[in-house]
Image (cartoon, rainbow, N blue to C red):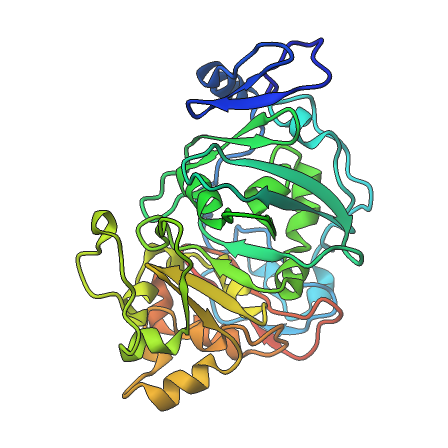
Length: 387
């Protein structure tokens, strides 16, 4: 369980002492090692499975999508067909989501949310950067929610450490939800110095132990990223650094590549080489195919690099083409980047870019289908990415 108070404690009064919360009502403190062990024993989040061989992925196109499949080495040719209607229909998400068995996160989330709802994080500002990470969660209808930001990041960060051992405190009881180091660092970076910030993060806003809820919310991610006020791309604590109370400078993304704006870093975080847009595109973050929709769908994007927040919108590609000599997205590690903030696509353009040989590092083996949330139109080629 994630709650560390006495069972009789109904009105917690939390005070932070030496970086650790304590309850003045029941005189308890969280024993993080015990909570972590209990959470590991009851955590129902499945590990990431290894990629299956081509032809055994059990994927299908929606019935409304005619498609062309390239020649492959699939032994069972009876499953290779140009008529998607002969394949099994995808499961339909239910409006009501069932609760999982009692586990480490059941107290945090209380009840599952419907498929037409989302949770949002309310992160209150603090002056001390090292203050414990404490957030509130609120549930809203998709069609009746406040303005919010969404965060794009990777759970494991640049070193791939997906171990959940960093405590994030939730709600009035300060229930403990352990997250990866990169997620925890991202929350500290997102925390304002005053007032509050409202945003969406998959690892916390979705109950990862509730498989039906997780499935229904993953299906909503296209809507979530396209409707947010902006996406904050978090590259990691080596790039998005604490500024010691100063506000970041704000510049357009193409200025990072032209060299007209050079990010400054604290002495303790100085990078070993000059940071440019090309070097950023070579980071491990951009090898994850999952982040593509998170950067293509929103209308605005922000990237923290040193003391600068670089922002991108629908004009960024034009600015790069006209302002940077010999700039070509096809010569970078992320050719699909020219579609940043271009919005929902119903075309083969992104699929063709993903087929570029430079995208061999994308860590995914699955068929990619881009379609609008309202309909599936046109002919789509099946492209497979292998790790």
